[in-house]
Amino acid sequence: MREPDDLSGLSMFVRIVEEGSLSAAGRALGLPKATISRNLALLEKRLGAPLLIRSTRALSLTDTGRRFFDRVQPIVRDAHLATAEVKSDHAAPSGLLRITAPVAYGQAAIAPRLLSFMRRYPAVRIDLHLHDGRVNVVNGGYDLAIRMGAIEDSELISHKLADITMVIVASPSWLEQHEVPRIPADLARHAAVVTRPESVQWKVGGEIVRVPWRMSTGSIIVTRNAARAGLGIAFMPEFLALGDLERGTLVRLLPDLELPVIQATALYTRAAIQSVALRTLMDDLLASRPIDVDAADTGF
Image 1 (cartoon, one colour):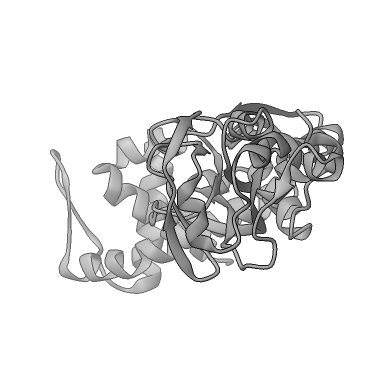
Image 2 (cartoon, helix red, strand yellow):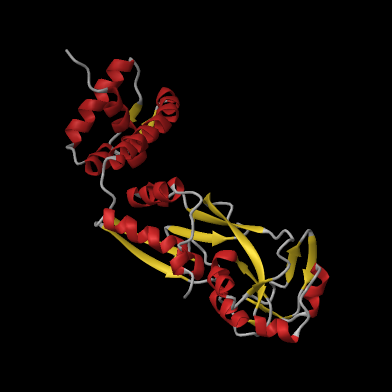
């Protein structure tokens, strides 16, 4: 006679121990208590050893049962995870994804890919939050966060999306009133427009220059616009300044000196990646690395 499936028997045994009784395991599995009892007896017969001591009040593990449980519980858990992954791989992406990204990079680089993604997967909904402040991914309930620069959330899974070239710029009107910088130290004699007050130490050509700020905007787009309006010099992603550099409304400063390259990174929790929609979206984003910026979307 054919014996019961091994994994099924092991899974049922693990559930009995975790639930604490045959009745509770039956309720969890949607099976009659008699079926649970019969399959437990078959497992013990096949192993040739008792695993549980039954009483009218509770169940307890034998020494053999404890050792057996400790060995098979991880196996059963991994088997269930593997089964879920295989099933989800063949499921169409669906459900809600909450995503946060910086305003400029989110608009110019991430949003176009989200639009394409949603056209291909109509069952997916996306709640996109664009802002330049740092958010707590877990507490904020986000499935995916796009970050620029240094990453501090070591408990999150991270994937590099692109390298972002930086530039230092000023408007022609600003340079008419102030001497054009020739060396990094000259920058300290200019007022800067910055996104955050602490962003005043600029690494230029291997040197660190502290630049006094005149305006802190809280937004890299406003920083660009303020520099364009002649309110000071600014340090920003090149893609955000390209249109102005081409039109001559902004001028690149110290173009021959090396500036830092800022990484754009995707972050998510280990729990979030169980989502088919998120895994599919990440496959799309990583397949197109480095993610280029749509030049048409940098004018704002």
